[in-house]
Structure formats: structure tokens, C-alpha cells
Length: 388
Image (cartoon, rainbow, N blue to C red; front, side):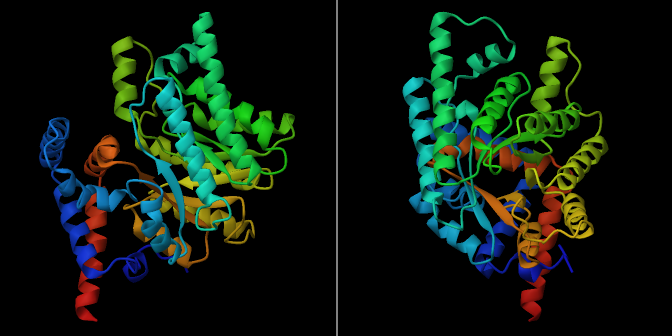
């Protein structure tokens, strides 16, 4: 029976010193003032080139990041694999600008595909379109504004890079997920993802788009996207998540005077997420589903739906997914029960991945009960080990 409270399974991959370090890290993240002050100071110190990389590397980085490059992620990949959990290598360098940087970013993403080729430990590749395209260009395309001749050339290069990444995945049968981003650039991303699906999803789901269900319009979009895929006789690949840009979205909507795209309350997001999962399971013969959730109830819900439909736990079209360093009680207990599970494993140089780390720290601080849940589980396992 699936039991997310089993801490012996959840933390089998951590020795006691690592468990203690995680305890103190989450304890610190329970203090919003400390997180905000520490983040600002660390950011300043990095910009001033002060020697603090070692501190970051041994705290937040060690908990949430796989390594500085693909090769140095090997230890994390193997540790997950030994407990039946796959790795999704996520090149988490942010703020790239310029064609040379975007080309280099695409080359690095392709390297993750080549690393995954033939390696059962790495079931998916992933990328953000803003890693290979200029944000303002994506915004202009999303608004369907006319492009200048130079922008047309630039957009053609974006399409070329995205196609190259997806084509490399297609060549080696490696599924590739395209992450969701802000609402005002998402239409361009959706367009690119669907064009790639039309080219590469004819025989199986290989290109996956991401649907953020904290948006009130995305459950209907999921259903429309499925109908569009049916009309093209292709498979739909989709990753369902709640979302990651809520505060930014609400602030922008208020500042610019348009209705917020975000659900009115969390319960509405939960309802739509579970409805989205149910829709995918009901059409699982034509949909590849990655359920990206740290919510226990949503993961139970998907497991129960699979059981009710008589689907095998390791169905090729269903994968549960969480982030490295978070919700291990969900990931490892699901894997132990026989389900397909994969962790997002971000990687990159310390200073380049720092914005990602700050988001993780703030997310754990702001999500109600997140830190308390992690601390409670770690304490339970510490006590279990002391008593054994």
C-alpha cells in the first residue's frame, strides 16, 4: 500500500550527517526574514566576487542541485537510480542574452539528450525556451505583433534551435519536455511546442508541453490541445504542474489593469490539477503524462485513478515528478511502490544557478506548511534511527 509517511524509505538514500544537514537547512528556510536577508547578502557577495561559493555549494546547492556540469551530476544520478528514481537533467543557467549565448544554451541542452541516450536512469530531457530565445521577442510573437526583418531572422533562429533540440530527442527516442513560463510569452511557447509535436509525436509522445493549472484557463486549454492533437493524428505529451510565477503574474495584472490569469484561490488550482490528471488518465492511450506535483493528495489521486483504470503502476505513459531535494517522501515511496518517478536535477555553475536556488528557498518559505512538512518528516526519521 502506498504510504507517504514511511520515512525509512523516503530517506534511505541519505546518511545521518546528510539528514542532519537537511534538517538545519529547512530550519533556516522556515525564517522568511533570514532567507531574504541571506539571499540579498549572498547575491551581493557573488557580484563582488567574494569567496562564498563554498558556503553556497555546501548548503542550498548541495540540497537542490546535481552538480556544476553534466559529468559532475553522475553521483546524484546514480544515487537516485539506486532507489528506482529517474533523473531529468535541467540546465538551470538563467539570464542568457545574445545569439551566441542562446546557441551555447541549445548545445548544452542537446548534450543532456546525448547523456540520456541509452541511459535508463535519465527518462526525460527538459528546457526553457527563454534559454534559447530573447524574452522580448517571445513577448512580441505572443502578442502577434508584426516583426521587423531582423526580428524575423531572429525568430527563425529560435525555431531552428528548438527544432534541433527536439529532433535530437526524436533521433534517439528521448522524450523532451518544454517548460511553461510567464503568461505573456506562453502563446509563443505553446505554438513552438505544438509545431514540434506535429513533427515528432506521430508514433509516441516525445515532445511534451507544460500546462500550469494555477491559471484558470489552462484546464480548457489542455482539452483543446488534446483535440488538436487528435485532429493531427499525433500523441499529446504533457506535463501538468500547478505553477511557478504566481506573485509576478498577479502584480503585472494589477499594474497593467487586466484580470489576473491566476486562480482565485488555491482550492481552485487543486481542483483543476486533479481534473487535468483525470482527463489525461482517461485518454492515456494517446497522452504521455508527467505529473509534476509536491502535493500528497494529488499524487495519491493519480495512483488511485491508475488503479481504478486497471493500469500497471509502471505504465509507459505515466511519470510522477518532483524536484531534487524536495518531497523525498513522495518520490521514493512512489518508486518503492513500483511507479515511474523522475526528479528534476538542476545543474550549472554556482553563480549561474543562484537565482534558481533563491526561488527554491523562497518557495519553501512561502508555501504554507512546506518547511514544516519537510522538518517533521526529517525529525521522524532521525528519531527512528536513534531508536533502531
